[in-house]
Length: 368
Image (tube, rainbow, N blue to C red; front, side, top):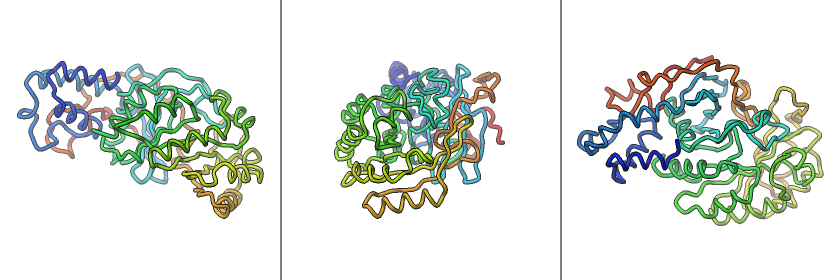
């Protein structure tokens, strides 16, 4: 399901703009139907009230949490089962953040990332993306959403931008707290510049200042040079007012040398952005390793001294394989998923917030 499909259904059922906004808000915030100043029976038209149970059942069946893997740092990796029994992963982060997936698998095939090992299986619909947010909000508050989970958002632009538009309106997420992450695609830059209502912040997976090395690390990324990528990001940063977040996975002996430090100073001096250096997270079957903690700190310190705003970020959820590069559809954990609509929560009136969950709350969530 895509969000325009849902909106069309609501309008056909008699929903006006205010009714539609309220339903989308309740769904994306994981709130029960009676939330709000006016009771549904006095606010919604009779035709919409009659159609809501069927619509609610479809929303509840979009996704459910199959397993929850809690990290020591307060993060949670959620294995999410979709209606066709495919799975994706999203990660609840400390400080009210959520990392969502936009695809099942990924076509880019980054050498240090687990997600792309089996290629791209399918796109997620925009409603399936929002369903991840609803599931997360059923567990805790979410005030920031980053598109840094499974998949390359630029390869699923229509669905991702529909989800971003809802998150920044009815979803109540501040626009600078919605982060569109990409390996760098001209179509993504063009689409972001065309956004009028909701403009997200931009994160670019850079990883090296050398064009040839980048082609080896990101074998199926667009063939733009690091200079071209930074130029495109700079234009959007100045237009949106949000600094670009340059992502750099630190790989020992690959992109942690003095030559890369000099390249970063050359590329990013005077640019409106921040460099996030992320030490490599272990991935089975991959020969890369992370530099020592002392080496990572020394690189960040040297860049700071040269005028490059640099943040050394150790990924949340590493102990439960929820860190950057560690997400994948762990189908082995999910033999069969039977969606039980009679048990799925909805927008129906419920006795209390404590007794309810969300439109898309799972029938069960097994903690590790």
